[in-house]
Image 1 (cartoon, helix red, strand yellow):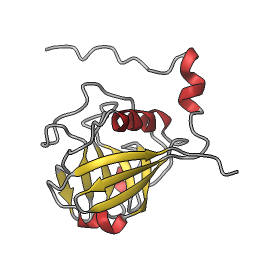
Image 2 (image 1 turned 135 degrees about the horizontal axis):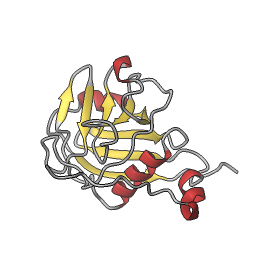
Image 3 (image 1 turned 60 degrees about the vertical axis):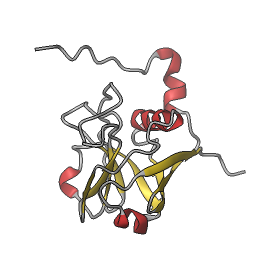
Image 4 (image 1 turned 90 degrees about the vertical axis):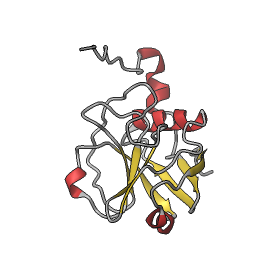
Length: 170
């Protein structure tokens, strides 16, 4: 057996403020899919490390041209696997950030294979899924394009994701 290795937090004294006070308002992710656009509000105040991880992957083009490898009607549409089979990831894991949010239709959660094994795979709920509450980090919610999410089929792709960074209204 090989050891997974030590899990080390990316949060340190020198970057604590930046990590937890980075955005005045929640940023939005604009997913351009083969079916159309889905806009997700990233819930930074509820899952800051998960949102930072997602944005970092987006900024590096990680999700461009990846397919929705798992789509189950009335359950979830899942993306973020570079292999396209549900077994791939970014080469590291992040800790879970459980919160008090509930998996209603259009919530975005971090896919896992066990506690603290998230990385790049995420899912959009296509119907309420209360059995997932407090078991998978909720880090976003669809604010526009849910009709597009309902049309996603397995092997449809993400053409590109862009981030609309939160700006305070003046």
